[in-house]
Image (cartoon, rainbow, N blue to C red):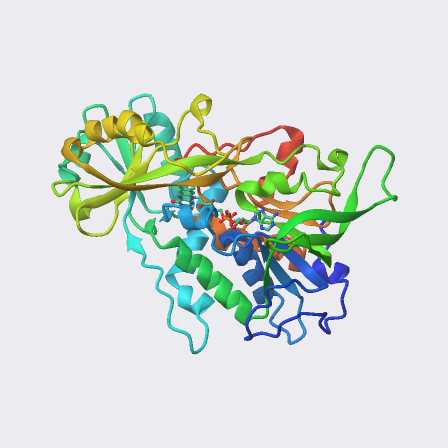
Length: 450
Ligand SMILES: Cc1cc2nc3c(=O)[nH]c(=O)nc-3n(C[C@H](O)[C@H](O)[C@H](O)COP(=O)(O)OP(=O)(O)OC[C@H]3O[C@@H](n4cnc5c(N)ncnc54)[C@H](O)[C@@H]3O)c2cc1C
């Protein structure tokens, strides 16, 4: 059973050293103690922190939530390097439900994340349907997922090749059997604005943040467990200061692992015996490229967020004949993730031919810029892992969304906060996304990973 925060608070709520009251500037140094330490200040970490404050009811001496982020410039964070897309078209019920929650949250973002006396939030939402194309071999699976999406209330149309050609005359539909097209709640937005809005609102509600890297934990073993069933609690998180050998131990009741692509690595930190971290958390960084190009005679304003039968994707990027896109490589051709350099040949040799096959006008595109970012890749089943760790009793996971974590952050953050504050999921039942499936070896596959 999940213990709630109320059962576990180490502090009286009077405030430890360095605790910053709501509305003041964040202290870059960590405090001595916090009720909840969120490791990772990406969109998921800040979403959890925000929802914790919302759900506790914003009492004056509420829980102390600390977000620890090692990279204040977010130079490698997945959130800011993402393509910014949101769609309803997933194959797993929970992912569709999270997308529906997030779309509604984003629509009313100023009601949720607006801060008094601050400018309104504009996430620059560009409404535009995702268009998934299916070959004859892919058609049945696509039609089945659309059925599920409709059951969940998503507005998705199935288009025949003739309908497709009428709506998007610039497209080669020769090898397409059917396509699914999102009619509402799909498009893209600015990821940094969403991250910053969560962060700003959470800080205004009293969440504290600090710069530093969590490199070690101090645990105490639970001796009440039957022999062979190891378990422990984290008592301290060691936050290492930037460019220093100094570290600050932070006493805590709960740790939220929102370390994104590095969530698996966090469980290899000093102080965590290997035997406690079995099975290992299968989340690792996988490098993905995004390329931009210019094509004045391309699809133009009617361009959807198109996902090709080949796996290549593209969307409009602004209004001046600019586009962006990419493609995940097959497993055996994964690029070396040790840095974020871009392989330009990958565009020339792999992506461009597929784009030009689908959109003949792209034959004459001119490549602009490019960047690489890390998918927070769950190698087990490409879905988020949420909820308590089976052996580290007070560690909760919010990571591993494998390329769809930006759009699911509002829902996933709320779900984890519900587990912590209420002891159960209330808004969406996300139990199937828990650790049990890793222990049982039962993947919960998402077919719509782009
Ligand atoms: C090219 C690309 C395109 C994408 N497109 C989309 C899209 O269209 N739609 C969508 O929904 N998603 C998309 N994604 C995926 C999405 O960006 C991620 O799923 C999401 O941003 C994950 O958020 P996060 O907060 O878990 O991770 P991050 O944003 O990476 O944040 C994790 C943070 O944890 C910090 N950290 C790690 N370890 C430690 C530690 N030990 N101590 C302190 N701090 C630590 C890191 O510095 C990092 O800032 C895309 C990703 C990429 C790379």
